[in-house]
Image (cartoon, rainbow, N blue to C red; front, side, top):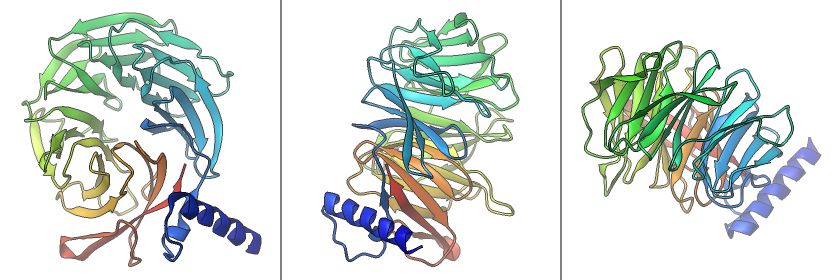
Length: 357
């Protein structure tokens, strides 16, 4: 135990020295600095397994990282422009990466370091990626206004649909469904039927560009986020997918663009929660139903926080432009932390960075 504590202290001291931070804070001393996953800004992070995450960024690499052990497992090189989005198929070792090079590459952690499939056809950066629940189809969306449906095994594009000004920002496949949801720079949210490749619903346009979306595990709710500045816009919105276009609540509090919004895995008997991250360098946790902010983590100097990957009810990963990936822990308790925040009614949620890489 003594050796472990000594190693812990040395890592923490190295981190503080490299960042020019004072060593007198007991909270800073608890932040572990691991080998950086990337050289440059990170655009996207997702989970491959309970221990492994996948990320992509401006260094054009797709990195698999064991965030619990603090070690890099694999760095895939194949794109010639920055990586914009990564997704994984649950229960498999499949990884899909989208890029500004207009392509999507498919990787398998167990099949070497070369891509096993390539999806070509878009004319601009690909920002949207989603896999069908059965793992047979891939949906892609781009700033070229095209939404495409691909057969994964053959890499053949089976369906294409172009909608004017539909500059796609994100795509989600609704669980156990044939429906796909996408956000766009034209400020709208569209629901697609993957069987007919037609739009079945278009939500009322928001005031600002829609940057991201996520669907609840039961497929009943959608959360979307908006760009903005000076506190205008920058909100996330909860929608009821059973009544398309029906707005439930809005989560307001970020000062700049809300870049990512995610449903958090529920803890037994716990409150349903939503996480958001913003260009204002903050991460917020919200009560899903009441829109009360339960806590805020401010990462000064980290730059835009652009992607989140919840692992379980108390752990999530956060990607930043300036300071890599952050392992963030959520605790219901009384320990003051870097980002603890109390919501109305005495709600107290401690939000702490426990490691950076």
